Image (cartoon, rainbow, N blue to C red; front, side, top):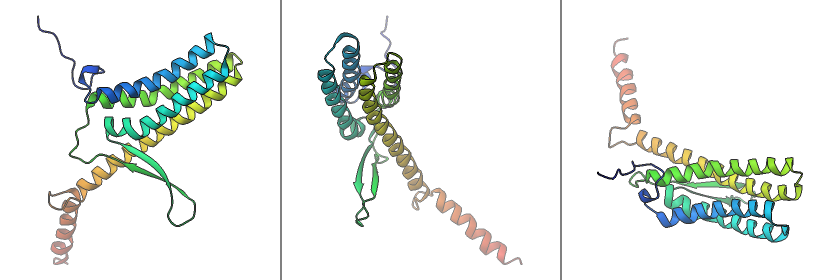
Length: 197
C-alpha cells in the first residue's frame, strides 16, 4: 500500500520550504500565548509572567516583521520618518518579484497564524474582563496591539505587492500588456474613425 503524500498547500510540516523559520515563527507565537495562560491560571507571580510574555511578544513581533514575513511569504514592512522634516510617519512595503516562488504551505501557515493569533488574544481579553482580572488585561491589550499591527501591515504589504504586480503586467510594453492593448485600441479608434467624419 502506497503512503499518501499531502497535497501542496496542506498544513503539513514536511511540505515547508523553510521549516526552521516556520518553527521559530510558530514557537514565538504559541509560547507567548501558553505562558500567558499558565500565568493566568497557575501562577500568582504577575510581574514575572508579564516580563516573560512581553519579551516573547517583542521577539515574535520582530521575528515576524523582519524574518518570517520575508522568508515565508516574501513580504516585509517598516516605518520611517519623511525626509522633508515634517515628522510624518511613512509605511514602506517590500514585496517579492515575480520570479520568486512562494511555498503554498509556508504561506498558509503564515496567513492563518497572522489572523488567528490576534483573535485568540481578543478572546483572552474577554476572559480577563469576565474574570475581573484587569491587571492581566493590560498585558492582553499590548499583545493585541502588536499582533494587529503586524497583521494590518502585512495585509497592506500583500495588497501593495499584488497591485504592483498587476501594474507591472499592465505597463509591460514588450509583452503585449493591458496598457499597450488599450493604447492600441484607442489610437486605432482616434485615427481610423477620425477620417470618416
